[in-house]
Image 1 (cartoon, rainbow, N blue to C red):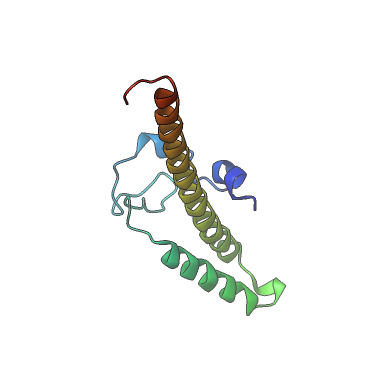
Image 2 (image 1 turned 120 degrees about the vertical axis):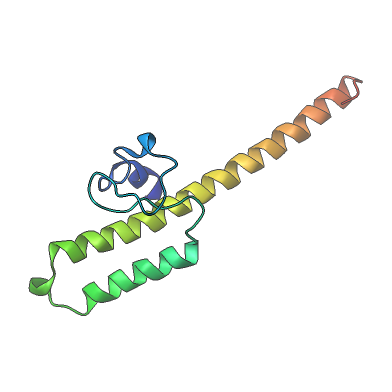
Length: 115
C-alpha cells in the first residue's frame, strides 16, 4: 500500500493546491484541469472512475494506448489513493484523540484530581 507516499509526488495535482483551497469545480487550474469542490467526491465515485479508466486500458493493445488515457488512469488511481490515505489519517487522529482523552482522565483520577 503505497498511497501515503504517492500522495505528494504523482502528477501535478498538488503543486499549487495550497494557493487555491476554496476554488470550486468551475475554476480551472494552471494545467487546465478542474478543481474539485470540498466534500463532493465519495470513495464509491472515485473507485468507479478508477475502474472505468482501467477497463478502457484493458480493452486495448499496448500500441493503441494513448498517453492521455494512461495519465487519466494514473490520475484516477492516485485520486482514490489520496482520498483513502486522507480517510485513514482522519481515523488515526480520531483514535489518538480518544486515547489522549482516556489517558488524561486516568492520570487525573490516579492523582486524585477531578477532571
